[in-house]
Amino acid sequence: MLSLMLKDILLLKKTIVFSALYLVVMLFVFASLDNAASVFIICTVAITYVLTVSGCALDDKNKADVILNSLPLSRSVVVGARYLMVLVYVMFGVVVYTLATWIVGMLNLIPNLYPVNLEEFLGAFLSISLLASIYLPLYFKFGYIKSKIYHFILFFGMFFGISFLASGITSGNPTLLRIAAFLSELSDGVIGTMIAGTALVMLAVSYGISLRIYRNREF
Amino acid sequence: MDKILQVQNLTKNFRDFKLDNVSFSMEKGFIMGFIGPNGAGKSTTIKLIMNLLKKDAGQVLVFGLDNIRHEKEIKNRIGFVYDENYYYEELTPKEMGRIIAPLYKNWDDKAFSHYIRRFELPLDRKIKDLSKGMKMKFSLAVALSHNAELLIMDEPTSGLDPIVRNELLDILTDISRKEDKGVFFSTHITSDLDKVADCITFIHEGRIIFSSAKDDILENYCLVKGARGLIRDEDRGSFIGIKENQFGFEGLAQDRKKLRRMYGESIVIEKPTLEDIMLYFTRRNRNA
Image (cartoon, rainbow over all chains, first blue to last red; front, side, top):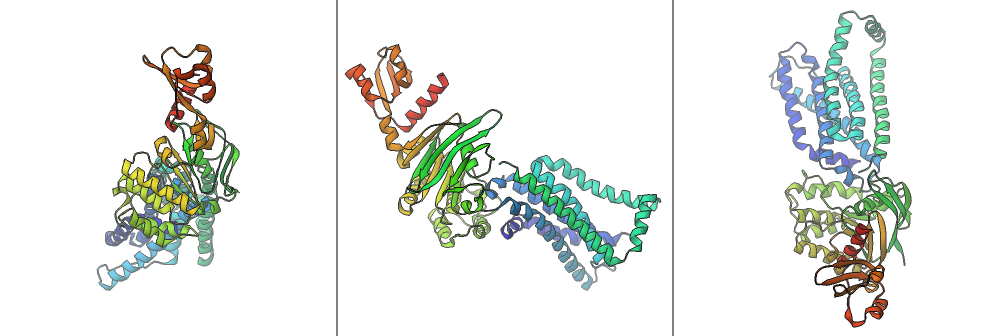
């Protein structure tokens, strides 16, 4: 498992460095905007998703499944490594964001910096879990090239969906308002547990579907 | 003798091709050549042995173990070299070695370094920048660095220049002779096998034509030559295949004594090469 994770890191080392720089640049871009607090969620989701899809693209380009399935590796490990890398990339986003805000703060370059809090971390984790849980089974079924169209729809659908939900709440959609009211009555701890639990259940179900698909694949 | 590889009634159906009840076996310490024209089913058989394709029927035993139930254990003891490079082109041999090493129980860093030096492979150059010969040597270095007991190679010599091809064949001979390991080697370049193989399995149109010791095969078949019009129509059945031109005929047959009795000194009987045998069998099926 660790070998496959190392493989992705070595393959994507340039993209990883670029992602860290992208996050720092976005700190400055968002500093002048009203929604500066959401920079962490947007960057972490974007970085994690781009790195996950790039890793899949390189596996597909190199027809790596032939080698991976000729090595003493079970198919559950090949699939599992893809899912674990999603968690690694989220943690990478947290570490880079924390370091960047710390350094930029020390240098006093941006007046209002928003350190990562649990709420934002869970928001990012839930969003990326949803994206990965839908994308990865499609990738394991169709490969990178054929799943490209779904990936495109998914990525833009996610942003459209979030703004649709937000406008639904502000325009007074009764169902959404009821859900929002129900959630507002719960304690932060319960909501946090619900979000983390939902994200993990989505990933676990998605892993099960991907594994079932991958076990039946031929190379 | 220990059977290192047993394939029994292996069947796989595709829309336009069928691997049909393929059976053969191979013993330790031997190099088995797996020959057949393009599209005969060589790669399909190898992919089924490696569980890259799902079989429809039959069984594959490697080291006496079922290749699906004991997949991980078997793959720990197998080295593979494929007809093209499937390693990550963006990585270097050194990085690829770092990734693969922990996956094998018996990975031997010293052996890996030894083969990298022996094959003069640049450790820090990206795999995409290596020549085809170097890529194949890198695959071979990986295959030889974890004490594999069986090497499975799918057309490893195709597209290689004669120098690299000969080097590879020398290495294979060393491996099978010194270390009591098995090599299963598919190719359509039969001259490679004339040099190194101990036994030959011939597949054509998804069926095994024969599987036996190379010397027996070369002894059992004979190449018959003679003047044009010499062969009587009723004797054509004694030949596996006949090729005729304006000067005479040449054919592959099995019963040399019978032919000698029938035609005496008017025919010349020679020992065929593997290529002759493959060509005549292929032609017979095409004419059928």
